[in-house]
Image 1 (cartoon, rainbow, N blue to C red):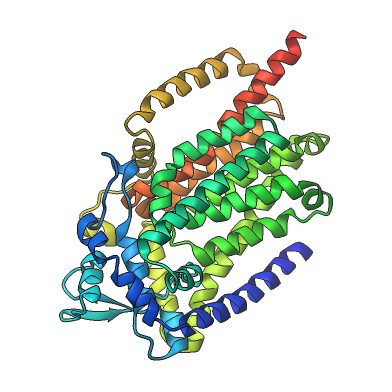
Image 2: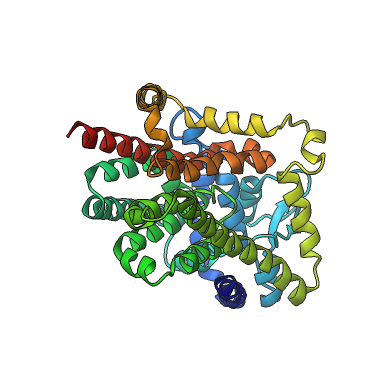
Amino acid sequence: MKKFLKIIAGVALSIFIGAALMILTYSLPTERVVQNVRESLPLYEREGTYPSWALGEHSKLDNFTDAIILLEVTHPIKNTIDSAMLNPRFGLRQDEKPVDALIKVLRGDTTGLHEIIYPRYWHGYLAVIKPLLMMMRVNHLRMLLAYADFILFVAALMMFQKVLGSVYAFAFAAAVMVLNLVSVSMSFQFSSIYIVTLTAIIFMLKKNNRLFGEDLYNYFFAAIGIIVAFTDFLTYPIFSVALPLTVFYLLNRRELLKKNLAHVLKLMTGLLFSWGVGYVGMWSGKWLVAQILTGHETFTDALHQIFVYLQMNNALTEAGWQISSLGAVQRNIAVFGHGPIRIFIFVAIIFLLYFLIRYRRLLTRRKILPYLFPAALPFVWYAAASGHSHIHAFFTYRGLAATVFALFCMVTEILFYKEHEDK
């Protein structure tokens, strides 16, 4: 209870800091930003809404959302506080096609456009993107993002090899392969979860002794949830908790297993809960602070959309979507098993089934079972948020990277048991 109250206090403080940061971001001048974004007009005229650098949904970029980001960052600011909380942008009256609206705005033509507000997210990415766009063009920002994503991957890979060994470094590399780093680096909205999660992983690998020894992990996971809620556009947030949970167990399993399995699972559930409190608390905090500062019915708008994504109303069915929890899971698995990666998945499934059958008695070992907890989380997310997960499977499937990592580590543990028994 004491930890919970401290986390709640941390969420409240984060909401205050987040609101101040967004107000500061919207206080920055936009003239230079508009000029630099206008240079990207040929880019979006050529690429359109959902370009793909290779055939298949796995390689699809999300210019739909990136155009929203650029429309927000270039929108004229009349009232700083209202803009920071309601995040206005221009849009077409007839249909929501942000790329088409962006092209018109960059051409200086606002006929047929009207102002749209988008207050249910923090849009905290603007605190980074806007200052950078004051200094560089969109294509240069894409390249900078690609460099940052690759450097984070190399840094995390080296830390895995140093702290946990080459096998676990290889497992991490396999997880990043599932993420498809090319697409992640080319779309602004895909990168926030990746950057936050890999930064958290590197910090865990480097500072685990302090985090575990001083019992700080609940606060750390809550902080991850807070930052994800502030910066993410609801892409694949489950990845930001499922992967760190597996790393937490890897780093501390010797100490954890000195007690019983129930204790280990209780600790991991507590970390998941802490992340959830940070994530949900920070996200809903935007609705509260926006409604207080602007008087707009933000709560109503946000709750309506959540009910849509959770399939708690008939909006998607009436729009022609045939969505179910099982269907959402199947759709994400189908996108995950794309093109050439199907060969790797097929071999991996055969390999995994072989070990599960041959060493099935080892699956009951308390050292093996904790890996199944984070491995299952993406499937729970897809089933619960079936509306969102089905429609946006081309990027939500990336949550399965955490499943790949957890199962890879589980097989490694099985091999360790086998080698130990042979000796």
